[in-house]
Length: 181
Ligand SMILES: [Zn+2]
Ligand SMILES: [Zn+2]
Image (cartoon, rainbow, N blue to C red):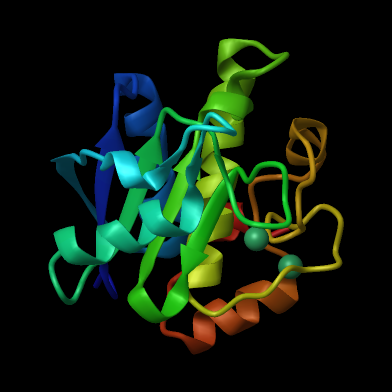
């Protein structure tokens, strides 16, 4: 039985194969039910004109108002975003609101289509890991390892190390073997 529902929202346009890979990986990796929830429009106040980037926290907080109460809200945004103190982020989770965003613009850089999709899936699993209480992991291959660049994203695999899996299983998630390092 799935121990939760993830509602996927989209900002701008996200290709069908990306959505399908994300949906299938999330349901297989974490045993969660995935629903497509439609598009989210972002208000102008969430955009920082001087930087040309969205404010990741403002954007992610918006999800909490859109999703249904019991669900986890996940936004895939074809945008670039930052948090104060960092030039950019690939994603952001706000665990207490059960919401997470992944920003696609930079994940598309310097790679082919197949690896781009793999990067998106890794960052989605990473942010959902935060939603379920995981912190950054020191195991370099673990998907919960912090990524400073797309090359860091490429270096880690799309699976959780054993100690991260232990935490997820304590939270009632069914992590499949193929998503355990
Ligand atoms: Zn993180
Ligand atoms: Zn780990």
